[in-house]
Image (tube, rainbow, N blue to C red; front, side, top):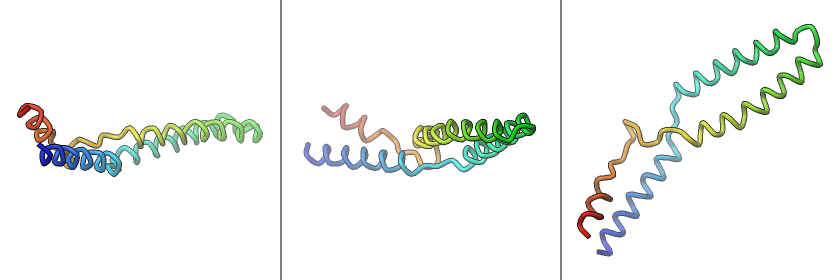
Length: 96
């Protein structure tokens, strides 16, 4: 029973490790492109007034940075090819 508990803990640690290291480069490329496109659109709209352009770009940057952090934290760590099967945990629960 102690061995099963240790195996379950190791599997949990492996899942947590994967969830913290998975980064989807396509997601970040798309996010960077759309962010740049939005930033350019904001700059073009406020091209006549430099002060308004600066304020609008700063507001966008202040909103985009936390959004990017949230996207990074809420990635998809358990999708292929780096997925870990929950079968050992399910088998340990069924055995008891």
